[in-house]
Image (cartoon, rainbow, N blue to C red; front, side):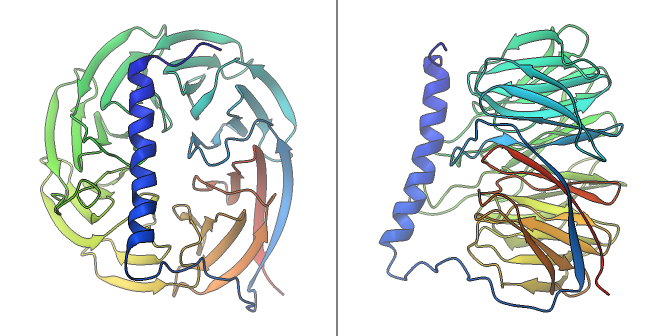
Length: 390
């Protein structure tokens, strides 16, 4: 495989330096760093059933890649760091097709409109046919991808580590528009997946800004700083938005590292409420509540209308949690030892726990039709469902 371009190498190195610096800063702090919480016994109220599992091979251990399954039209699509993309039936995990891209995949897949799209560590963006896995087109981006591309409205939109947000034609991969935001010297390793809000694209950046872009023209509609980073050092001023925003009704929700969780107006970016919080993994939403994974492993529930805290759960502190995913009356998170934990939406109490393959779960579980799909950093995809314990 070819070596990454110098610009891609630099972006990756800066991200890795930032993470290493955070670890050193923590170690040099006079206060001892809390160890990961030990799992304690509890009385389960949900029964977890594993439906199926499939090994993709080529795990991306410790690389913090943006590899996460997508579910569309009864099919689960997943990709490995070693370049394999697989389509499986959502109900039984039966393999439908398998494509070897021969790339170091780092983001995706995303599936919509008959396409399955993945991104690589060298900045290649590849679109495959959803029904056969055959390659439709490939495009060279300006930098590494660490978040899933956005597919829809006849476009594929990619966010790269060098601060570019680019829209390409879903038909042939030609560039439709590009916007760029300056990135700080040091950033966390990760980028926020862009989202659609009707005909607007919402994307977060490593300088703590949230941008709204016209999906058709690429014109910037508004650009809001969620929280201005402060402090004496560049580490203190880290303020990345690495978790995807969420859109519901007229409201946009966003969370940043060493910053705030906030609700904004889609029309002009006005912040309606904001609470101090620090998250690089993100949050889940339901009709009434936002569930946030704090950078320390706390899970906090905020009322959507005004941001008032409903509950906070610390039993999984420092366990490297994913963002929560909403499923029924529960939220589910993964951790650094490959466990999945179901928590009650009512009060945050632990309802169930199950293991996967013992490998870290970096990205949030995916929920479709009441089932939970998850990919471990070891390259295994698993499907689960729950029911009340009798």
